[in-house]
Image 1 (cartoon, helix red, strand yellow):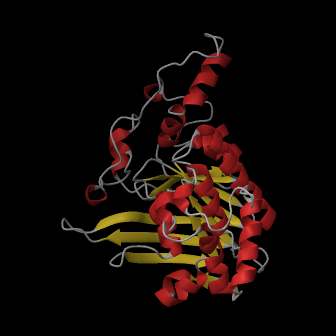
Image 2 (tube, one colour):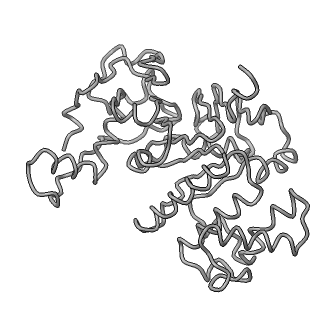
Image 3 (cartoon, one colour):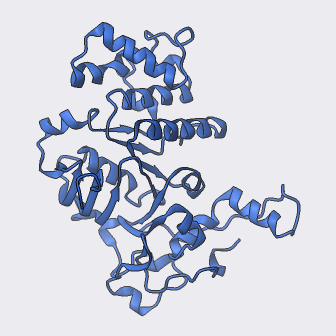
Length: 345
């Protein structure tokens, strides 16, 4: 592999364990994936699956007592070996993150202009005048024009969608190599969600960055990313190019997530000719909850919620390649075109 072919981000067998009063809690259990320059990867799964913890591990923002094993390599540099001072010089410059809730991520007592230009002054050494000028151009680029949104506004003077645009501008200020977006549209209405996602994809493509998009919504994944990794209980249980994943969802958990998408169920119902397009059938659900990381079952962590589970599922689960770039951690993968009745509404 030449330097030009090397991935931008390479995570190998990443394990994160947090100490608790009841003993160590394995939050991430052997996570591995790569992101190439210009590639968009989606991490999808329920709350508690380890998506946000993966992002925090990449950014070096884990709790102080977290125990980290494995490798996080960004542009040829091993991040797990860096000191906190060294990581501070990489955040914003080499990697940046759009957080889930901009009202808590933005500083309420600093203007939006200051917060967008701050990283440029810190990492690029620009003066205040140049920083303000660049901040103005970035805010214009994300749809906040100078007449309506001067640099001296404060976050509380903006709507949720506008604050999220400020967060995007701040994250892109130093044109980082890698952008992580952690549920960037959770607090926004549907119309603004689409606008924000389109904006992120457009800017990532324009700047040639790698993107890790974290979400619980497979509908968002289908419309946004090139590759998809499905996480459950701190592990990746299925990974594939996004079109291939939607063509053949091999893990029962992936099937359950897809069944719970409202618009997907409605479209399937209408396409079958069973009723008008506006009919809303009852949504399917996955029984149970993600297991407590301190009390994980042996073998497959999804076994307690899976209708296909049997005795072999209590043993270590191998990673099974199904096609180029498509693999699954399941002893009983779902065949192409097969359905799981228990996950149907």
